[in-house]
Image 1 (cartoon, rainbow, N blue to C red):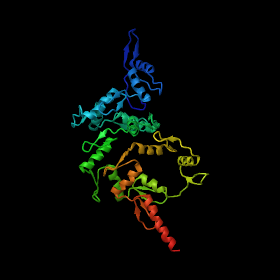
Image 2 (cartoon, rainbow, N blue to C red; image 1 turned 180 degrees about the horizontal axis):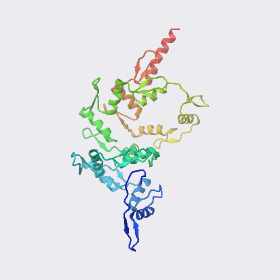
Image 3 (cartoon, rainbow, N blue to C red; image 1 turned 90 degrees about the horizontal axis):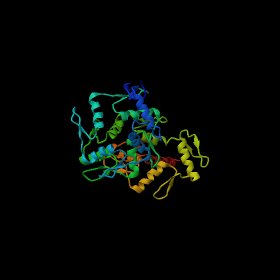
Image 4 (cartoon, rainbow, N blue to C red; image 1 turned 30 degrees about the vertical axis):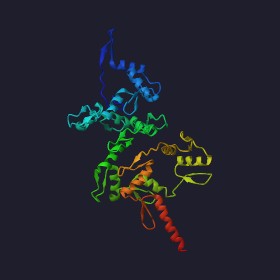
Length: 372
């Protein structure tokens, strides 16, 4: 039978004490009905499995790491986490000698050698070597986001993404640089930071010789040479990333179907229009628990809260400088990549930031006014 995942089930039977024959699967189904989650309806074959699952709803994390204070809802997850501190990697791949902290990670790795992809999506036929990736993929079809942040209500398709997100609220920075003592929220950020110490840059542009320590920055830089860019549908201007294109499109007046009756301002998107209206009504739905300041957008509140925590989660992999906003980091990175996506339509001069272009355009406006 084919459901979400292609699996072959045994219909093994056995005799009960009364001599009646029944299938093991029938016993399993009966057990599942006894161990059903009252919150979401998910069923389990044993009571302990249900109890562990219920912690995802209650937020209970009874297992505490004595090294860093991080809490977990499962004992085996704590044990696996503690190996980050001890450096223990007891599971070794016999093919290549690589070692892992957990057996699941080893099994997942071994599929690189075997090419095995046992999990197949019945919706689109795509196959996966890891069950967590398979489940995550299925949510693309269903739109399901089962993991909710109890602090802000934001929802996620993967538990790992929720855990990573929660560090914004807790301020936890479990990854520490052994050379300078700086701590980071994410392992990837630590690795990028450590390359600043070593001076190692893995990605080299063969056209101009420039080097990068992040693949994403290298790929973005290459678009300067290849012109493989995001194109503005209104003027044909090309941009190396989607963020720069979106910023540019704000310069076009375009068709704005949502007009504010208070001030006449128009908007392309309904949600932006609704946010704007709160400026007139004074409706501020989101409150800062630290200082009481009110905001009409949740993301604006999140950015504001970084002022209190001092957190700067966006780190430049080229120089190590940190920022509290992603767009500020993106603007800063243009100092390293040399990218100048904003072009003056009158003299072809290019700029790294839209504000610089606007300042430059005023020079033309003044020059034109002196001619008359």
